[in-house]
Image 1: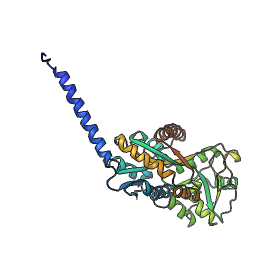
Image 2: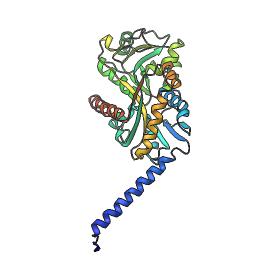
Image 3: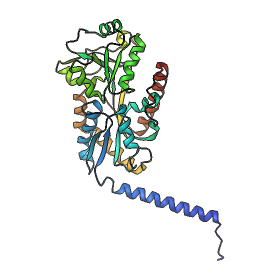
Image 4: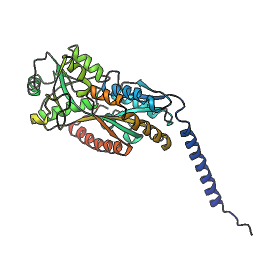
Length: 327
């Protein structure tokens, strides 16, 4: 049989195909023994807040479903930018992942970060919680109307704590200002936990964090929630009205879920998704979420991506309307 010459272009194509197969083989090999050492789950906020509680509950419940520990590391600061940047700068090998929060769809639009949700590969959505206005139990306001009326009499003096400038809870309080013609003094903290401690200490008048994050202190009688920014009343807060019930058309929620740098191999992402699916079904995980009144909202990578796209559009428009920039 006569020998058929191979053109340079064809030869190059074979070489490229071979290189691609080699890379794919390496990816499968990496996934084959993944994970072979602990996975770091970065929380971009301080200890004690809802994101931290969720991450630690997930870490504990995941032990049955992975041969390696998922270790939580708190890296707070810059409204979450420090922790998220740390994950993005890590090698995309599945050993450093993030507890992504809704701030990923707010911070780019206020000028805090140069990256966006598009720089992460979504793994699974785990939680969604609405914002709430909470004050000390002995505060003189027992309804949201009383609180807003008092705030309007002292423009810019009522201090409302949040989990960082440009964070979801900052924007929720800013949106309440916009809807009601009120002016607050927004006080940033490195997470909802420190904001609550400041409220308990009497250093601020209110916090705009989620109902889930204040539930323990409300149950103990130290704090009281005046209203939630939800479409309907929350389980565990049955006596707390929504803003919509009080004729304030505002509903803002935060979400949390797992993500990795976008160049993480799909085989590794699939393993992480499998861990997330099984862990989220663990009774111990769901029990902690119920105890903390955290809303369970599981979604796979496609559903999680859709949520991020939706909220990115919403907050981009809201921030533009408020003409709010931090940098």
